[in-house]
Length: 136
Image: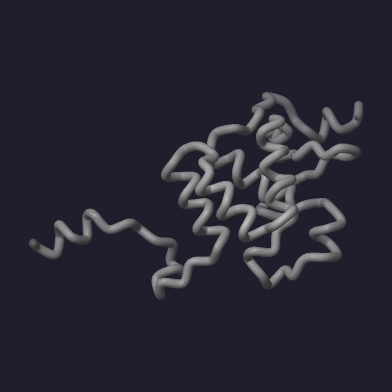
């Protein structure tokens, strides 16, 4: 088999994964992208990686609580809405409890947004969240 044929069939990895190191979040993200839905394998990977945060994220996605506005992605919690931007979150869990140096340390809001984006389960709103937020 020629080298070009082998190269064409191998998956393209992100540049930081060229050494073979893929973290647990990248693993379940790839599973979701490949399957296009929240399969039992993906659920198991998410919960193994994130425990209760993973469970809460999966519940939020299944309840369609991940919203995309023109300016932000928002995850609706039970008492507040949380703005997700560049895989960061406005919640206190992100601010106080998670290690910013650990790529697998994510709050359930960010996990939910990542899941919803990969399985096309985001509720899209053609309006600015900053304008909607004034009425909440």
